Image (tube, rainbow, N blue to C red; front, side, top):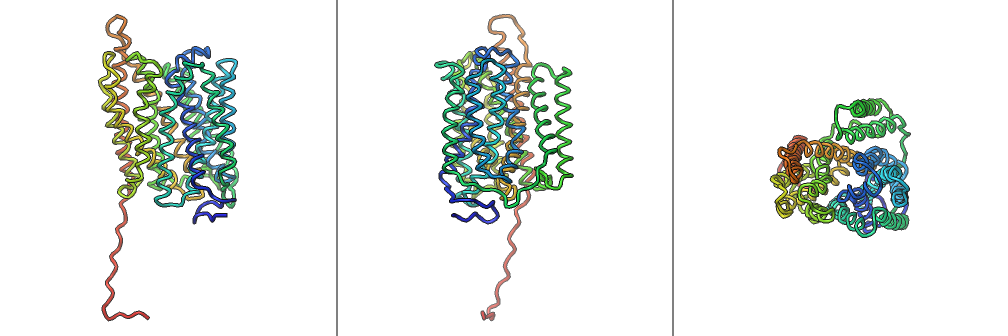
Length: 485
């Protein structure tokens, strides 16, 4: 049996670093493939599943609800009761959710399967970084492994829209989920065979009120953001948003009072933890939210097919894979916090380069900006993975991952809502067949500027969390007459 690294959770068998990284990276890529697969063919999927405009919105939002509500809970449970156990359960549930989506007799069942898919994704993502950090001791090897994990995030985003559009076109919307169900079942089998269990020596007491307030509050908040796209002043939207904010405030009060909280609020005194959660929030808000809706905008403005729009998006996500794999070279020169700020800054510059889209422009007009944003995204994903693990105690790594990803996905839900609202804010000024496309192009330009500004704001706030590196104290010279006994 291999000994656990100092300060980490005890393990119950031989650690297989390469196999652990391969399984967790594959599962992570699979979760992002499943989330992004419908983005390039939302209209076609909604029509085939007999869903209306609001149903189209909930194809993506339902998964966000499931992920965001249970990430922190799943991470805490994994640290206390077994990371391999939670991860493997998540993969099996993932396969079941995709099978249910493939066999759904009606649109409502398909949407319920998408929510269940989010729950399963939370159970996979939260313990993944804990498993990786357990198998790779702190140092260059861990930095390289976390860079590969960050690349897997980008790989899934690159593959998802293209896979979804291709399969939707050739075999129908059910086959999109059916294929993912088969692959996820295979990954679950590999997890059972290859992963090593690790858990806390003394599991903490259950925090039921924390779980209840967090899951309910997050669900209401994201539901309110989704429904708000049809009008922010509606009583239902106001009630959902207000209820979500109040319950999340109640969650903070519960965590401050309970003896063994799911999320120790003292972590927010740590600059590294603030940079990790804040950086993840702005990543979702300014980058993931905008890019998730970009294929739909490209179809409306440029008239691209779903497959072509997914291919254009792959310029961004594909370069993020290559960038994340090389991000370890920055570790010797930049702290993880500085790397997050740099990533957000580069992403903001890249998004700004997307400004000026018109119906007569070709997709090549977007390539430079998407390439720059892709490089920044890879740097960002690798750095956030480093911070998520390093900013919490080693035996709480899965909880740190859960907190980081919860912040990212709540930001993503808000980012999609902002993008949809801003992009739809322009109205046609002249009648004609191309008037709607020109109005959408104007709205897209506004959304681009908002997203770029949020990236730059996130970079500035992340830099503000940095603490000066302690300078080494000079060693007094040893007197020449000193002798060694």
